[in-house]
Length: 75
Image (cartoon, rainbow, N blue to C red; front, side, top):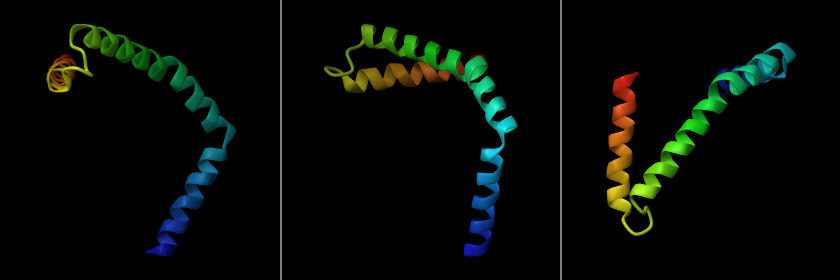
């Protein structure tokens, strides 16, 4: 089992060290991940404005769960 783990870790390190892979990862982060994170941040900020997560953590968690389900239904 240790041999397989060592092979997988070694392969992952070689892939991560590849400049083309690094460039593609940076491009994907800037074009796809970063805008989604900004959108999620804004939604959480709005949600925290509706329900105070410190004073009402259960209500905040319920509203957060509802929002996540809404987003997942939209696709």
